[in-house]
Image 1 (cartoon, rainbow over the protein chains, first blue to last red):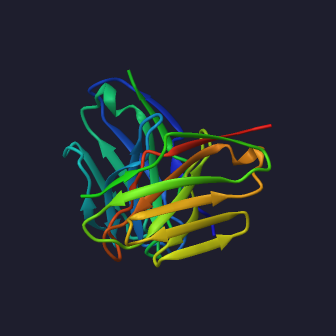
Image 2: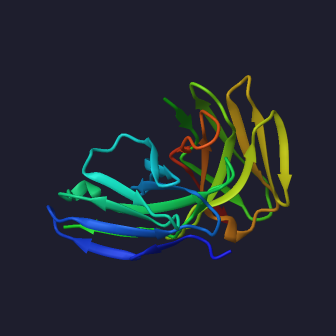
Length: 111
Length: 111
């Protein structure tokens, strides 16, 4: 098992810019979920992909979008960045219905 | 929708036992999970309860009462390294519906 890896680990962007975050799923896991975690809060669900199709979305605006690739790696794209988008972005992959494996996250700072 | 309530902070002495409670409201129910997250780290899966009762894994145990929409995480023989945030999380349906997290309980273990 290689675990879930995310890149980059830290990122600073300017308000209005666009950002792409990347995630490599744990080997064999066909479901990937993205979460936003503000400081001192629990992870908030953004969306989930299963076999390259989005199959669930949380309360996030359309400027948050994603992709899952045939090798089950994934991207999170955020357009028109706002200051409130500053957070830790977590990717989690799963195969079983209840055991998520999280990556260490990307710390995004919007200035 | 779903909502989860857990205490924001708990302090306990090294070597003692601590219980972190979680109450939830969901339209359906497909298990209660617990995750540990150290500062700057990724959430790590601890345990999962789908049925009523106690699940034990080493120093950690988790309990579920579906009739009360209630669960708890029990940590025994506390160690300083147990200082972290602990999140309960639920899924309201089977398969690929997302995990919804509580806001987390920050556990501080003191000497």
